[in-house]
Amino acid sequence: MKAIGIRKSHPIDHPDSFIEFNTEEPKPGDSDLLIRIKAVSVNPVDFKVRQNAAKDNELEQPKILGWDAAGIVERVGNKVTKFKQGDEVYYAGEIDRPGCNAEFQLVNENIAGHKPKNISFEEAAVMPLTSLTAWECIFERLKIEENSGENQDILVLGGAGGVGSIAIQLLKKLTKFNVIATASRNETEAWCRNMAADVIVNHKNLEEEMKAKGYENVDYILNFSDTDMHWDAMASLIKPQGNICSIVETKNPVDLNKLKNKSVAFHWELMFTRAKFQTPDMHKQHEILERISKLLEEETIETTLNKTFQGLDPETFKEVHSLQESGKSIGKNVISF
Image (cartoon, rainbow, N blue to C red; front, side, top):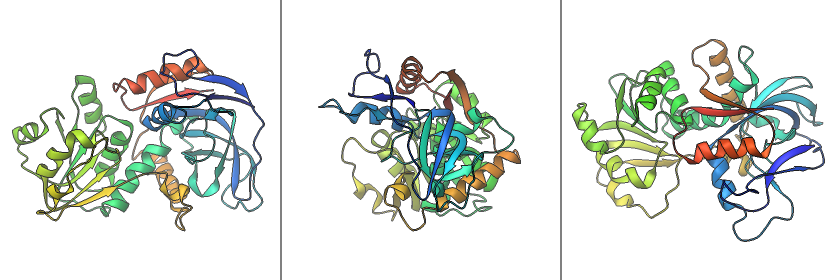
């Protein structure tokens, strides 16, 4: 099968930052689906892995990136019960297995969902990783209940990004929270408003911006932007006994003591945890994706697709990774094969 991968962690403008190669079509294990891929999306995790997976030595076998896809089930493993050949699916995959930047990919059935019937493969491919991340942040890490949040405020840092875009929608459609989102450009502010955010603030001088809009503090904070940059502001803005959830690793140590006097809880979220550690509740990601699919089919929420690119080739992936690395990407970008 044809695949796009990396042998070395080159800068994105290097001629060999991505290479095309051929490899054997994978064979499904007992719980696997073999997917013929129709479209993939690119997330920050893609370029972070590309930048770090082969810094020192060239890989003997190229590494296939990609953790967001939609396609058709080609074959199923002996113990698969949730899907059958010919089903249209969408999924984020597993960080420790070959990714989706190829013609075919294996994925465990417990972390895949049926593609929403009313949207295209491209529109579906942008949803799994960010939807799972946002859902786990809101309803599992922060333990927010559906229909709760009346007279409460939640701050979403990075509102126009992939995770922020779906988090805003889930909060507005499934809870009663007042949603404050950060955006620093006219186009990102417009995007957040389209996602239904109630209030927009600039992430630069965040505390001053919040106070100018009438907010001394908030009940919850979702950080999808920069943990190092916003640590002090988050510690200041969170209410006593509040909760903060972040998906962005720190580059430098942060002072947890800043949260102590307020008895604030800090939560990490990594969407890959369940699959990486084969947790007993791994199947919950299937259930979340099925729920997201239903919400999309009912048009309760909408796809966060913004730009579409064409072609399973190195130049296309270079273009999309370059856009992601620029920090100016809005919503999600998809590559259609």
